[in-house]
Image (cartoon, rainbow, N blue to C red; front, side, top):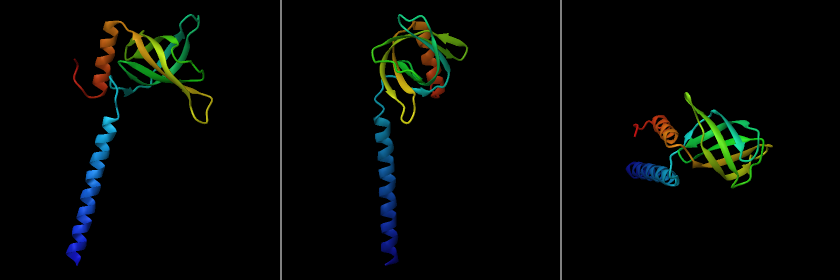
Length: 140
């Protein structure tokens, strides 16, 4: 009787382990991005195209394809944005388009996702190398 109980416990533990492994694989497969992103909290300035002033915010994450930041302003999708992003000892100046913007729950702030549309090749390569370094990958 005791052996049967121990075997059942082992079977349950094995099933739980397999389920945990499967959940980890599924979580990784949900990341359907063309560019891997990293958490990146750095000062950035942005200017809406056609407007004279820059606003200052802190980024949330970044990839070679775009970035996300939180602001007290709502920026409509498809708005063109000129950016100045501080990455280590360089200021990168891509131009992007707002891909999405949504209010932060229980707050008067908004999260904004910007897709890079124009990016100097040298600056893009610098960002790619930075992202790879932060992810523990080699330089390309």
